[in-house]
Image 1: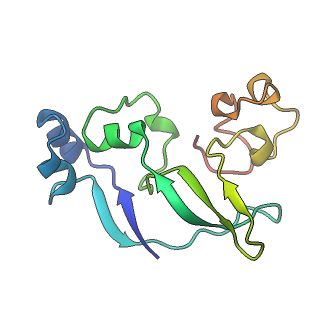
Image 2 (image 1 turned 90 degrees about the vertical axis):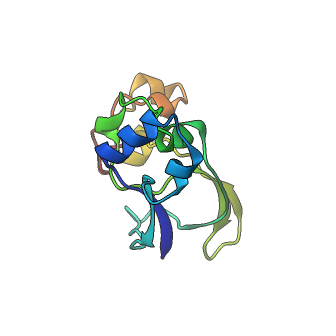
Length: 139
């Protein structure tokens, strides 16, 4: 499928930062975004459902990454290249139910029991186990 991917490049990131996120750099030939074919991901397990996006948002952290203003603090927890736009509403494939995607990959979806204190509080965005479980490292 065709998708925009954020491709990690230190020189391009430095250029975006040096030009203060100039629209010409952020969207031009030196952009960190690359249009290309990506494989449709396999579902991680039998309890997962495929969602066909209806609408996806680009959040502040995505735009910060494109303009060279992102904090690199979470960089070790990021898989590259990635498709930005984790704020998604869509339809369940085969069911037709409208859904909102929870982008945080906490203990429950990683198959970790018991859940960490943050996930047990209902705060998977602060999960303490983002490097553990049945999924790849990531938020």
